[in-house]
Structures are given as C-alpha cells and as structure tokens.
Length: 432
Image (cartoon, rainbow, N blue to C red):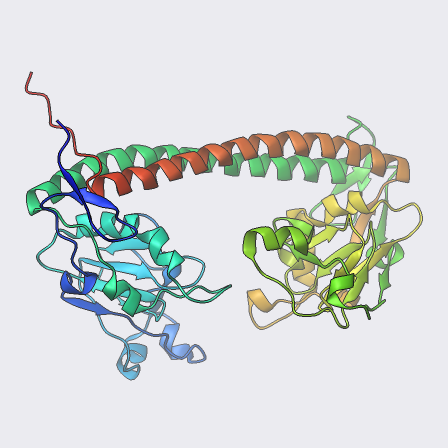
C-alpha cells in the first residue's frame, strides 16, 4: 500500500512522506567550512608536497581517495585560511567547471576556496551524500554568475533537505549503493567505448593524411619525425609556402557581422550556435579579424592542443587568432584534418614557447615554418572525401554512445531523487 505523503513546501523537494523532516543543512552538520590557495609563485609551497590539497576538479565519484596536488607543510603553516579536515566528511564544489560535484573524502586534507566542506558525526554521511546529489541541479540553478556560476556557502547552509528516521536512511543508502554501482559500471564501460571510438577516429585520420588511401605504394622518407615515410609522389613543404596570412580587420558593428569562435573539440563554429547552449554573448567586434570560407583559423595559445580549424563560414573572429589563406592547389579541409592530428600538435609544441602549458604560444613565424606533407590537389580531395565519410560514421557511433550515456546519467539522477525524497520506497526483501 502506498504510504501517505504531504507537501514539503520546498520547491526542489515537492511531496515527502508524512513523518519526514525538512531541516536546513546548517542544522544537520557540525561544521561547514572551506579553504584557500597558497601562493602559487612559491616553489617551496608545492614541490614535494606531503599534505593533500583538495580542488573542485578532484570531486568525481562517491569517494575521494586522493588529490591531484599536494602542498608542503611550509605552505600550510604560512597560509592562515587553511584548515585540516579529518575523514570522513563531504566536499562540495562551489564554482568552476565541476560546480555542484560532491564526494565523501576518506583522506586527511585541506581544500581550496572552491570547495565547501561539511562534517557531521550523527547523520550517515552516505545518506547526506545522496541528498545533496539529489539537490545538485537546484544548487547549480541557485548559483550566481554567468560563465563562472558560484554556489555560496549561505545557499548551501540555507538549503532544506528531506530527512527520514535513521533506520530508513540506511535502507535508502544500501539500496542506492547497489543500484548506483550497477549504473556506474555501465557508465564506465560506455565512456571507455567512446574513448576507443575517438582513438579510432584519430588513427584513421593520421593514417590517411600521412600515408594516403591508395594501398601499397612506393614510399620515401618524409623528413618529418612523427610521420617517417610518405608516398613517393608527395612533397614536403613549409606551411608558409601553402598558406598566406590574412590581416583584414572588421570595422562593422556587432549586429552586422557573423561572429566565429574556435574550440579544440569543435573546431570553427558560429557564435550564434554557441549562444543557444552557453548563453555567452560578445559585447563588440571592433578590430576583430575577418575570416572567409576555407580560411584556417589558429589559436596561437592552444594550437598545440588541436585548436585549429577550417572555417565553413564568412565572418569575424578574435584578434588573438591567426588567419591563414590557402594558396592555389591547397585544399584547406585536408589540412584541417592534418593540423588536428596529435603528431602535428607535437610539432606546434616543439616550436612554441611559454612559462606554462596553458600559456604555451606558437607564434605565426614559428607556425609557418613547420614542415608538412603536400599531396597533389586531386589526392588531397580524395583523402578529404574518404575522411568525411569515415569520420561521419564514427561520429554517429560516438553520438549514439553519448546519448546512451546521457540516458543512464539522467536515470541515475532520477533514481537518487525519487528515493531520497521518499517518492519511492525501498522494496522490502522477500521472506520466501
């Protein structure tokens, strides 16, 4: 028989069973705190560190067992805002790419300022983990800010949560642990499958743009380390002999232009398409660089990570990018594939310079001096046609896997929500 329900009066919870309480988070935890980032320019604060230092990016999965970075005892002693937390305790990401992510820490550690630590001795932390996982979308929705949403500690403290009696908490935890473990196993296998398809796509592209697709043929040394041999009919050229630079600037208003963006994973895309998913809008386009269909757009900071692409549109883009015009007998789409291989990314890195990986620049003089392969125009087109077909088929398989992944993730969210709010009751074990 269905149990009797009541309106909780709380937007994200809705109805809960009669007898359940809805206290604020601050009333269910002994301590709610955070941390900070020791001075990054101090070498003796991070080198050979021994103290676990939790960042929001470390929060993935139910249990946190290690951190990606450690700090030294000197850093801890000289940074007054740092506090040691002793297991077990909850850690919630308050902002950044991992905003809303949550883990139970099983290690002694301190945290940065993007993490909220919640400690409790009486309530089962496993149940509290599932409750806050169920509240994740509401917390993120309540965050302030645009590109960097921020869940304040006050929002977390004031959050009302559904609490049954301890015996039912344990039943819910046991049930969700079992079901979520099954789902996590499915998620892990699906993600691994997606990665294998991505590796296959990269291998297909690399083989085609460095060896061609005409089967066995006479080969010769390319003079390019990562490629080794190429078909004997192919040439080896410097980029500056195949592309010239475009320096044309925009003087039209933002409303009159098609704003173009470049992303490592997506390549060149129209900003209007991104606005639908990110909500980000440029304020103006003064001084932006003109881009025309078939131009190659290069991010000098991230080209070593694959941030290069052929534009399919006319428009304008950031003045921080370099724009390249294909010369006669050069097919931009062929070099779009070539420039996004891991081998070419390595060439960009070798030619670049900088003080850290994420600020590593490959300037135009260095980029244009890189040696690349040069098949005939007819063979460039032949390879592009082949790769368009092959990559489209692989992308379709990846899309199906990602859709399946999304469905499992949504089902897991729904499962947790339904049981921690009491809308579904853990089934009794059979006595047969």
